[in-house]
Picture 1 (cartoon, rainbow, N blue to C red):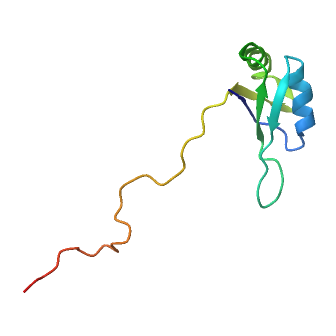
Picture 2 (picture 1 turned 90 degrees about the vertical axis):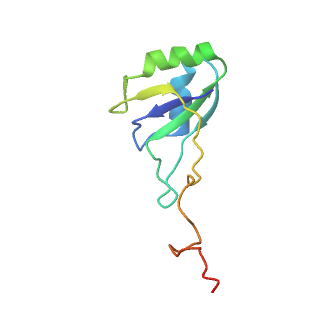
Picture 3 (picture 1 turned 60 degrees about the horizontal axis):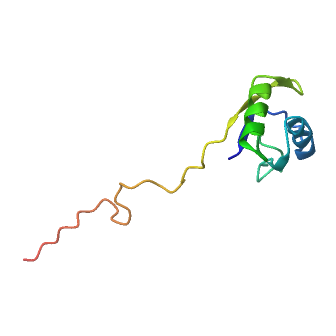
Length: 103
C-alpha cells in the first residue's frame, strides 16, 4: 500500500519527501510524477513506507499540515483505475445501418 500526498509545492523534491516521511518510519520509495511536456512536478506524490503502522502515523501527522507554504492532503492511495474506454458506442460502423437489402 502507498500514501497519496497532494497539494504539494512545485518546488518539492523526492529528497524533501523522503526526509519528512522518514520522521515516521522507513521510506521504501517516493514517486513524484512530472508533467510530460514541462518536466515540472504535478503537485502530488506517492510514498511507500515499510509498515502499515508507519503509514498510518505519517497520514495522521501530516494530513492538513502546512509544509512549504501549502496545506498537505495525505491519505491512503487508491488503486489505479483502468483507463481504457468503456464499452458502448458503435465503433467502426460510422452510424450507418448494418441491414442490407437483398432484393
